Length: 525
Image (tube, rainbow, N blue to C red; front, side):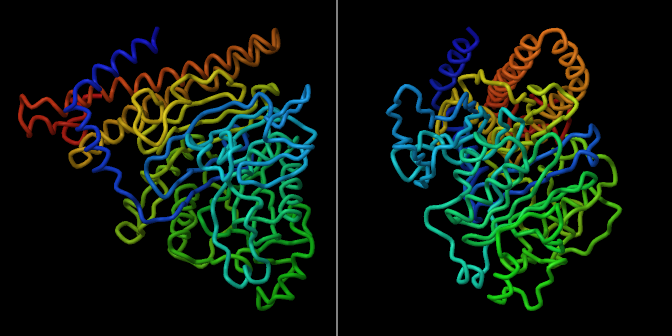
């Protein structure tokens, strides 16, 4: 009934050609194509570094263009399933063909998991069997293993010559699809991914975030077959941009895992002048440290979370791990992922902030060891750029995806959840960004509401779970689905209100421009 009502509202808007033209003008004006390459920013924290003693895994999935529709999906089981002699084209004679064409043996495990692929994933895949198992980006599986893949990182020329990247191998586009159905722990995921990189080779340099309710690891691919993974200290966090980050680590530590023969390889090919096994600089050996495009964001993130540590801007490398001044809250990470250089030394100098328009989606995954197993994982998900969309808390058991979150493409569609948030933000940018502060006010109110009720909700769910596990899980599912429905409905409603405000010429230009900047009480949202 609600969907039918929304369709009716959308149809009435679409029938008004002038308003449709206005919406497209707003989008064109506010989202001009960017020349920058794909670029993400990540934050990962140990459980003693956070206020609720949770593992936290977060990333902005940025892209080279502004409009990139993302879907919410839940894989009840991977589609390499072959019961009853299935003729699934993804599987042939025990071999699983992934979306980029890589072929691996069918895994034994088949854990369910959540994911967020591109809307056009099928078309993006290099063969006809992509089936949206492509660029799934992030997810938490049935064993509460979380993966966010990836931060693209550049490999230096010397490392490329010594160990070339492969054409079809381990890549960002398939890492969640490949690992989430199999991994039982974060450590197991690290070891499994490392095995695949060494056996099949990597197609690109990447930084991958991996966690479970007990620990978190940062995994870096440096060349065709070499990698390193470092365990995030429980009392610290790591910030990652698009340059390799791992340095000053002990290759013999139990908290560091790496490819076989890594030190010998670096020594043989002189990737470091004087390599030190117990103070190893993986980022310098394989990457290109010190690029302002990357280190500016590291500086900004560390300044926000550890303001007591005064650091020079544009250093060659920043500390790999830092302790936060205060226990990190989910809201703090939301602020970091939306951060710009305003009010800092780099305002007007740095070209690439953390928060940008061309973020396709943003997520903050939390893993709580104190919750029942099925309720440990939550994904705070922003659909589209968090500059114009709210973070909504979705329990990892949410498998009832509202229709709007699996509709549409990169072409504007009025029934698509992605375009509901993107369309509202585009209109807010219309006329010199007059109404963007209104949108920030709107979503901040809902986010704060969700955060405030979260502690009480978890307490209630734990009690229900003690009495009846199925009831508690069903409640968490319905809560998540309800929030997803609620927020897309609000986005559509407020977009209509803003359209009405913008197109109302009765008061003339000066009156129409009364928005949040002039008077917050008169904000149309």
